[in-house]
Image (cartoon, rainbow over all chains, first blue to last red; front, side, top):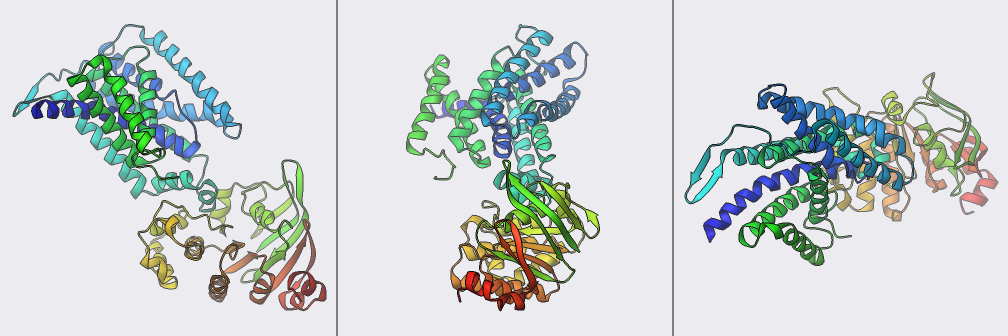
Length: 287
Length: 233
């Protein structure tokens, strides 16, 4: 029983890492621009597809394809900010909402046109399995967990310890005051979108390596990402990390002990229960 | 140093500042006084680029900054300590102060940081607390220190006494007097006309979006109209 719980927790950490990376991107974009960036999941999947394409059709080693895809993700994020969201920056909020929905459909369509409707798995060649006591840990899953931790820590250090990171926080907390400090509030959203999208692409690659990428997966993932934001507390960085981990582990344990068909249901039931007790989310501030 | 000519500001097509002209010389302390809604704060906001000027011109040290963006104006040397303090509530006191030095690249930032905390010992005491947890008076001190961290050539203060208890207001004005004594050029907007006129060298009296009187602070303080309308005599 205990072994089984530990086993499912390890499994849950890997998928939880994916949720955390998606949610961190969403929460940063939401914090800075107040936009619910629905297209985030589909763009993340584009990054996963791109990695698959580079690794298979172009014959690049996966380890070389990943940085290319991350860089492409960063640039794509910058483009999305300039072309899609900047024009509606000062318009009614519903405009950005509609742009986000339209962008989601567009990116899903582009993914379908470019990469087809077959599901693809990124061939990592990482097939070893570690055994520890009674727990089996596939090496790929371990690397995914480690990579997620490294990315999250790097992001935290960037935001807390660098001037640009502090400027991002300042814009999120008080835009006008940030201008008065000399922050260029036109370039900050570019950095935020670039970074968030790169993190999303990392998550897309993880999904493609652990499971598979197929049409519709990205939309499901973005819904989970927003669920994590609400679960952890809107706009809270630590909340997104805790929320993503909790959601991943809950799903995994539910799949292991009850049925994988019900894992989403159980995960959302847990989320609703948490929100009934703490409406502001796990680490959100009470209103 | 700062020269505003025939400045107009409007919000949503409604003009609230109808062409004001004012000057601040280096080392001077100038106050803008007048009733609530007279256009004093809007004038300040237009100077630092938070709202666009609808007409007229603003020049700083001979350069036209009328259409410059907010962050470029800060880099030119104009810093504002905004109305309502506007600290970054979830960032720590020390992070707030460091944000004040955002435009600087020199090596004296840490020295300035400890100088600010010498000037405001409460900030040293609370340095790792979230700024939002400070009292109103403490936040005002933080906002002032944060503005000074930029080493501004001119520092604009927008209603620094607003919403503070009388005792705190007095200590805010003591602080402003110290900053003035340090040689910082100051442009101050204040509804507490008596305090402002005691501190300033010169003042402009705003009424309904226009400047109706200007002169040495002492002269304005003794002008019968000002005394009747703004100083409660």
